[in-house]
Length: 332
Image (cartoon, rainbow, N blue to C red; front, side):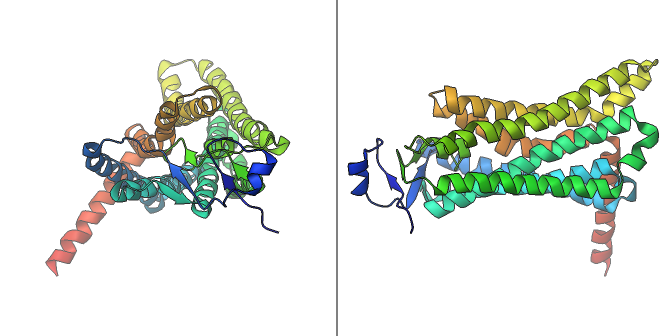
């Protein structure tokens, strides 16, 4: 028997809940109510989206087209680029459409779908960054056994584990939300159906709800951060034992890009998690959400391409190949 999902401005008692209508939609928060800013926001986020998709596609093409980049490090990097494209595609196109149509309504099914897809790809980003940290640990601390340890089977297993963990995280959230009988509000204090915001709309004091908000989030976050921190502690320890300054710089430069992305991704994610439980300002959470759903996927290609000589060479070769085909096409 399907449960009714009910919404009102405050949580009802059992008698009131029986007479309330079924919820069919939620309302997302607008980044700005100023009509003059809407065209600017439309162009801005459309530009962000196009730059992100193009930048990550270039990383994928560069890695796939250059045989020298067919290594575990760039295998995970291209997977991260795919995940970033999917992550930003779950939120920004909908936001662009809302700005264009001046509508903030999203259906219950649409909201649940957006939340599910967002969790899958955000969790995949986290797991892939963890796998990349382990890859850098093996490369620097065990260079002689790197090819043996980071073999294709292990890389495929780590990617598959990332996908499965993301699906489990998403499905657990879905199962909890589907148990909600009514909501305290239809207004979501973010520009998309952010999981913590949607869970906080529930009126009932469910033990399983608290598990999702605290235990599941802490478990996935704690696992990833503990692996990353322990890997970098050992990496730094190994680098400090290198006698030459040039050797230290060369060793650290191989993981500098990854460390920058990790700090950007987890820093903003922690702000959102703490803000959803401690802050009363939805604007602060929305700004932090913009950082790790829009800005981080957009900056990742630049961080990896600007700080990585191999990627620069691969992109240069890709450009030359494109120019060659362009000139050949015009010749015929």
